[in-house]
Structure formats: structure tokens, C-alpha cells
Image (cartoon, rainbow, N blue to C red):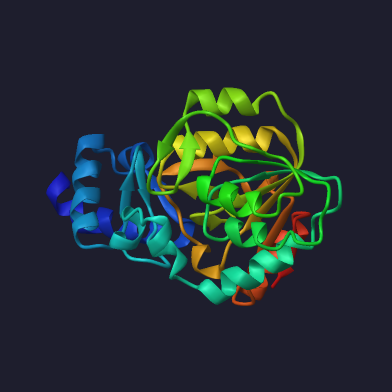
Length: 262
């Protein structure tokens, strides 16, 4: 049987694997059908044009919860603030209840992490680090605790400071809690984002923190973005809304991760 005659079977298999596992690797499909990786990449390119998967380096991932435009578009802070705003406010208020007086905290950039920062009125003695300029402005209004900002260069989309200088600065600290913003989350693939520099900065924040508290609304669930940040097992607590599937909540809790519903 020639390669051409196997094409429909191969592409059907790719879609089945994507649906069941969420992702596939070019090399695995190449070995299974005994064809070149170039041939598989052509399959993926065609299927991506049909908007049934998203190509990433070395393979492809599922578009289960959003279409291709949603994943590829890196919205600005102002655009993101308009989405699921009430849920983000509730999540921010609930997440702030996890803070204790005298805590040392890192705030990642994001439209949900800023909602946490808006709920610190009762605290008198915190030490806070953030790489997000808009969050730093919110924190400065309290005028009760120091706000530390790393160096680096400004990423306009997220109003955050990223890059080697910012990461090097963070390596001087070890904090009690990190409030981590999330672009995409799945149990299998963990936390991911659209930007490589943001991902690298987040990894440094995680290394500098005792607890990792991921804050995100349920629209981020079962999504995968280009740049991997951390596996699910590295998260201490998730604060999200009531639309998280009960099966997912149970699975996360079975993994030892605290799940808090706002």
C-alpha cells in the first residue's frame, strides 16, 4: 500500500489522538505509519488550516475549548480585563483571604492577579514583589508596605517586566506565596502561556516561592499555549470559579492540590 492511500487513515488517527490525549508528536506518528516527519508536518499543516488543531514545535495540540484565533491572539491587558470580569473579581477576593500578616508575596502580571492586589486593605505588614507595573501602582496606593519591582524590559501587552535582568533580580529572594496568573491550564500539560519570556519569568518566580497559588477563571481550563511554564504537580493551590468540572476538581484534589471555588 502506498503513502497516498494511507493519508485519510493517518489523518483520522491524528485527530483521534488529539481528541483523546490533547496532543501528538510528529515523530510518534511518523514511526507508526512509517512515513517521513515531513509528510506528517504536511498533514498537520492541512489540518491546522481546517482549524481542528494547533501546530506547535514537534507536534500539535487540541483546540478543545477555543478556536485557533483565540489561542494565537495575545490580547492586551485592557482587552483581557473585559473578559469574565465578575469572576475575576470574586477570585481575587477569595485568593486574598489566603494571605497572612507578615507574608512575603510575589504577584505575577495578569488581570486576575491584579484583583488579588485590590483586596489587601486589612494588612499592615507585607513585603511584595511584582513585575507588573499596573499592579505596582495599585499596591503603592496602600502606602503601608514596601513594593519591590525587578529590572528588565517592558512587555507592553502585559505591562510586565521580563528578561534576564528581571529573572536574575528575583533569584535574590525566597517568598511565602506566589500568585500566578494563567493563560492556559490542563491537568496533563500544566500551566502554559503565549510568550516565552513570560514563561521563563514565571518559572523563576515559582523557584523563589514556597507556595504557588494559581488564580484563573474557568475559561482557561483545558487549554494549551505555546510556552510551557510548570507541571500541575508544582501548584499548591488553585482559585477559580464554580464552572470548573467536578471531575477535574476531584482529580486535582486527589493530586494533593487545594481547589478553592470563588
